[in-house]
Image (cartoon, rainbow, N blue to C red; front, side):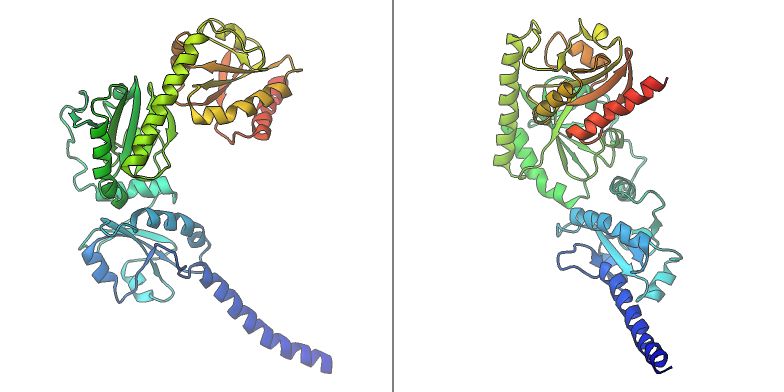
Amino acid sequence: MQFRSLFRHKMKILFPAAGWFFMQLFASSFAEAEDSKIKVLTAADFSTAIAKNNHFVMFFAPWCTYCQRLEPTWEELAEMLNEPVDSRVNIAKVDCTTDTSLCSEHDVTGYPTLKFFKQGSNAGAKFRGTRDLPSLSTFINEQMNDDPNEDSSSESGSAPENNSGLFELTDDNFHKHIATGSHFVKFYAPWCGHCQKLAPTWNSLAKSFESDPKVRISKIDCTIHDSVCINLEIRSYPTLLWFEDGRKVEKYSGHRNLEDFQAYVQKMLDSKSKSSQKSKQVEEDVPDKASPVLALSTETFESGIEKGITFVKFFAPWCGHCKRLAPTWDELAKKFSENSKIKIAKVDCTLSSSKTLCNTQEVDGFPSLFLYIDGKKVSEYNGSRDLEDLYNFVIKHEIQHDEL
């Protein structure tokens, strides 16, 4: 009996302590980290903040699982928009367990509730979409676009004007403009602080290559011309992409100063020049005997994919991602070298004998990995480019093919 009494006594002490511990654990997930960029608002400063700037606010509760899942994305959005001092929109949050009256005032009935408040307005526009970065960014674009019905250009389909080497693109002229040659394009939103900081440097970069016919520097406003930006999966601003002959090559991730930009452009142009010289030397499309990968061209493509499974890599020799993939692609070919039903192949889209083929197969970036079964394209691979995942992708289709 003494033991049971002692046990009950200890549990009475332990359970409140455990409850306090778990409450602290929940709260800690939303505690302000020292490096957090999210702006915390309370009843005391909410109205003042809204009066000074546009705000996208998350109303949350620390114990809310959905809020905890959203937190990393909200932090990422804040890093993009809150860092610049002159940003036109702030990413903020309100803890509804401590500011209950403020949340009630804004009709918060569930967590998280996301509302966009335009500067000076106490009426927030509620976000109802998918809580991912592209959807949240698109919503901000919609809210920040002062006149969404405004006709941005009566001649949007015409060729873009050359403004000291800088071309401003639209939904209508984008693809035609980048269809041939080398292009370095900035995808931006006018309200984005990082974009505003970058603008003078981007103008200077365009000016420095104004007389160079080998490259064009451009920009496109994603708040107006969203079709292009959505298709290219632009998830943050600014995004800087390099294109060759209408195809996306890579995303620039270096420092955003004039010297680094100029060095990058020159590197890409030099790489393309060297690749072109090599391509001319192998224009006859002689197969590489040292490689287990089947080299295809316009003339050999149809017969090459006619029977069985053919996994084809469409590439450009100057493409950095293609170079990194090459050894893995060779290893993948070796794994299937004894299987007569499966071929691992490649097409060099820079060869004049293959350019038409790459266009008809709708290759819009390098590398593009398409899988064909008995002459028909059945799938595009978009997963991880490691050997195991590529191998499993082919095996999955082999099993499905054999079951038919």
